[in-house]
Length: 424
Image (tube, helix red, strand yellow):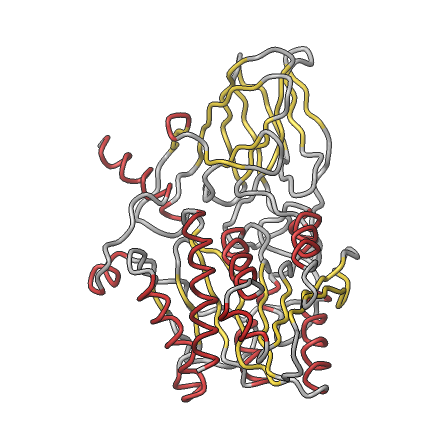
């Protein structure tokens, strides 16, 4: 029984991966989600979390959600040094992606145990710890406890019902989050930093429902009208997809001979943060309109998807032709969601050649491919991109626990192989 729990913990941490063989990947690898149900994307109410500080033990131990990206809906002091946290979603029904984020500190140095309880979900994300809110590390596994482990390898049923962690706290705050914090302000800092290069500009293409900027970064140093569209973070907790996208964009904007030549032939449009409201409010899945943005690429009821739709249309009217699109996400393990060539014909073969080339360069990590044979309805970004512009496109998914060094390498390799294919 003990060995079973150890295996479950290793899978949860992303330590155990499937062997690099087709037969093993087919048997044990993540096979992806089923067909997307048709849902309404008309605005629904969301519950904005109360922001404040919880104090305990005669005001010597404190919990806080007073920062962008936080999610903490309640705290109870169970006994001595033990606490239970409640994490609830912005509305329901909702994908089981229970994001959490809080700060904790104490007037006296001590160790405390924290139990996580979720409304309508199990514990998907392994805790990250920071002492400055910027640099995060994975919690030591010896200070992590599964409560009611799940079954299988992937999906919410494989996740534990709850978790308990042990951390040392003192007068300086400790951040505990589901994934690294990349809020709208931090993403904008990255955009501004990269935009120091003369061939990169960034500008606003619209406003989110709460009035935050929808920022677009444009890499363009030629008169070419061939363009790529890269988007990320439609779903707030999906940080690993953002990190791979970040490396992908930095490679395209880099100083390699290949990148310099590529930028003479192609423009790149990048919306790195599609859902700034959801990210800053610590949402599990939705925007502030209570909607999964990656179901709104047909009706366009939400301002975030409308902003990108209108931008694409305006550039197309200027003569731009879209040759490739990628939407970076995160899920239980690395997987690619392209459109099948039954739908796209030879035009879409580029995407499959690209996936093959990435896999050849990175053979140690086998990622599955789940191609869709349905173009309509065009609820998801990939389908809209192809249906309207015949843009070969993909939903590029990275695992929640994929090692961060590998995320960076995969983003870099993906960019290099795409440049090579498009220039060929």
